[in-house]
Length: 123
Image (cartoon, rainbow, N blue to C red; front, side, top):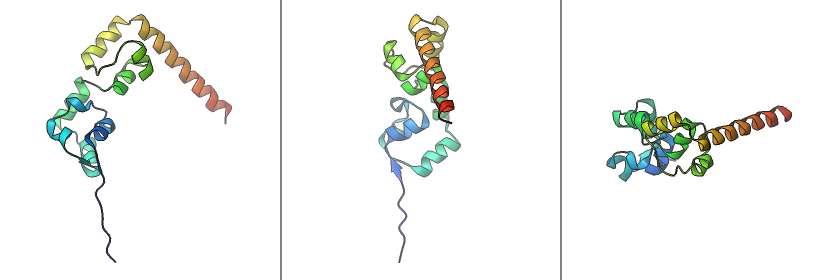
């Protein structure tokens, strides 16, 4: 009886999501290939310069933009943010602190409070 070990692979979009980067900003060789679980682990453990730079300056995917602004992805949409943003653009929005951002952050804080309340109640 022989055992066959198959290498688990994923599409570049899945790997980019797991790495927290915007797929369209990754190098062509990353976008065009498949990524094995071992390659993903290696990228996470010792990110190459392109990955470090993307994480530092962006453009960032919407979930990362939302987290950096302290709002939900739905809140981004309500605020008119539908594209990936660079770190510089995110910082400019924070500095401007538009009404939609204040509102969405307040909403997010309420959601977090409610989540804690429900967890406490269910204990």
